[in-house]
Length: 103
Image (cartoon, rainbow, N blue to C red; front, side, top):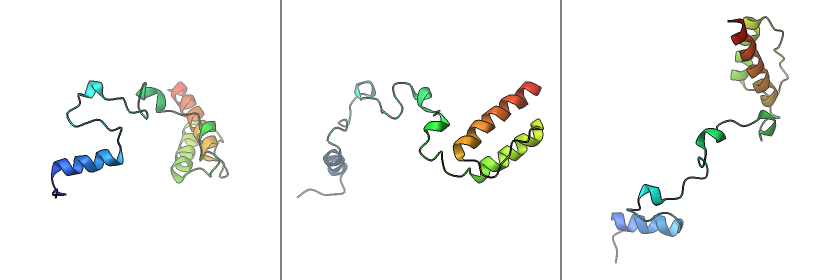
């Protein structure tokens, strides 16, 4: 009978849960890259707000606060309490650009 606390048995349990997982000792260059980050990790860090799953939800408190701040800095009457997350994000980007152009 195997001792369940040994590293080999834990490795066997992981392999049983994910048979495609690389074997211990496999060189990193031989392991398939993570599809969440590959092939271009920088390319998947931004997503168009119109494609957001939660884009139709009300904006967050942080977005509301930042919009108010940016509105004050730029002099724009941009803040509206009924914006969605996606709308707020796009407006924040616009106001940041406008603020940076003023500088």
